[in-house]
Image 1 (cartoon, each protein chain N blue to C red):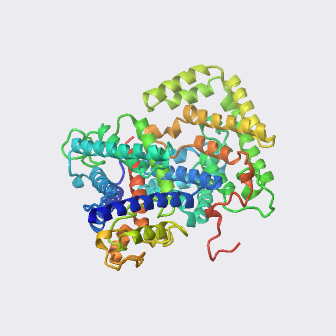
Image 2 (cartoon, each protein chain N blue to C red; image 1 turned 90 degrees about the vertical axis):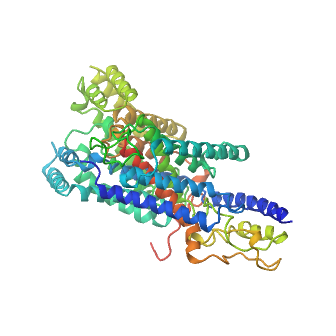
Image 3 (spheres, chains in turn yellow, red; image 1 turned 60 degrees about the vertical axis):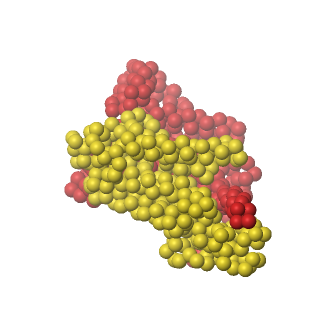
Length: 267
Length: 339
C-alpha cells in the first residue's frame, strides 16, 4: 500500500491554489507593466511550480513532459542564481542565506532536481511524472541520489520555518507594484520614505498580516501632487487579499512544505 | 518626462525595497532562544513530513510499534499493544492524524503567536508517543542503546520544549545558558546530568557491551542505505568488530564527561559541549543512519539532531544571556493570557 490518494489530492489541491493565487497576483499587480514587473518572476515561478507539483502528485493533473519541466526549472534556477549573485555583490555572502531570491533559488533548484532525478516506474511515460502513486508497477516513484533529496528537504523545511517565524511583511514580494495611487515627482520619494522609513514600515508592517503591500505606480497618479496617499486607493478587497504579505508568505510556506514532502516520500 | 518619472519612481522603489528588507530583517531579528525554538520547530516539521511516507501507511508501521513492547513491564507493554492494535485497525486515518499533528506542532512553534500552545502540546504529544509508541525508549526493557536512539528521541523533544519555554525565572540574575532561562540553572544542569549520565549507563549494559553488539548494530544499519552510507557503516562496524566492551567503555567515558560538563567552568563546559555535538553527529550518521530517512522507513530523524540542539541550549552565554537582553518577540505574553 502506498500513500492514500486522498492525501496526495489534498497536497495537489493546495498546490493548485498556490498556482491560482500566483496567477491572480500577476494579474492584479499588472505584472506585465514596467512598474509591476519587478517581482513577476517570483509569482511566475510559484505559478509554474504549483502546476508542476500538482501534476506530479496527481496523474490527471499532469501537463507537460518531464523534459519540458527540466528545461523550465533549469532556466528558473539560473535566473534566480543570477539575481542572488547580484545580491551577494551588494549585501555580501549573507545574501546566500537571507537574500530576497535565496528561497526562490532553492525552490527552483529542488524542482529541477526532482524532475531530473526521477527514477520511478513511470519516468519513461509521457506527461509529467504521471502521478506519484500510479507508477507502472503500482509502487511509489523514487529519485536518484536520495542524499540530495534529503539535503533539499532539510533546506526547504528550514526556510519554511524561517518564513513562518518572520513577519509577513519582511520578505513579501509585490512591495512596490500594483495599483496604489501616490503622487508623482518629489512627493513620491516622500511617500516611499514615509511608508518604509520612519516609524517602521507603517503602511506595510504596521498593518500586520492583513496589510496590503504598498504599491507605487506614478503613471496611475490620480491625486494632486503633494497629497500623500499611503493607503490602498483602488485595490478591491480581493486584490488586497491576493497581494497581502500574509498570502505571499502562506504560499511560500505551503510550497516549501509540499516540496519537502514530495522529496522525502520519493526517497 | 514620463520616462524620467519612471526612473525616479524606479529608484524610489528600489530604495523602498531595500529599506523594507532591512526593516523586516531587523523586526525578525532572532535571539538565541528563538533560534533554538525554530530548530525544534524544523525537526517537528521534518518528523511530520516523514510520517506521511508510504511505509507508515502499511501494516509494518503497526508491527514496528508493537515490537517496542518486547521486554517492557506489563503496564508499558499493554499500552503499546493496545496502541499497535488500534493503529493496525485504523491505519490510514490514525497515521494521517499523527502526521498532521506533528506538522502542526512544527508550524505552531515557528509561528510566534502560538509558540506557547504548540510547545505545551508538543510535551503532551511527546510523552504520549514515548509511552504508547516507543515503549519508553527501551529504558525499562534493557534494550536502550545510546548509539541507536536511547532514551527515545521523542522524550528529548519534550525536554527541549520545557527548556525552551518562552519565559524567564523572576530571579533577575543573568542566565548562564539558554536552557536555564525557563527552569533555572540548577534544574537545567540536573536534567542534563540525568540525560547524558543515563546514556553513559546504557552504553555499559550487558546487551550493549557484548563483543559484537556495536558491530552488529552498526552493520545492520547499512541495509537499504545509499552506497556511501552503507560503506561507511560497514567500515565503522569493522572497526569495532569484537571490540564491544572497549568501545562501550570509551563511549561511556565520553558520555560521562559530557554529563558532568554542565557543572564545569565555562571554557571547559564549552569543550564538553563540543564533544557532545560531535558525539551526536557520530551517533546520527553512523549509529542511526540519519534516522534511516534515506531508506524510506524513518519515522523521525532520531536522537542525533535533538542531542546536538540540546547541547546548544547549554552553550554558555555572554552578556546577552541576561533575561532582558536576550528577550525575543515570542517571549512577549499574548494579550489576555495571564500567568
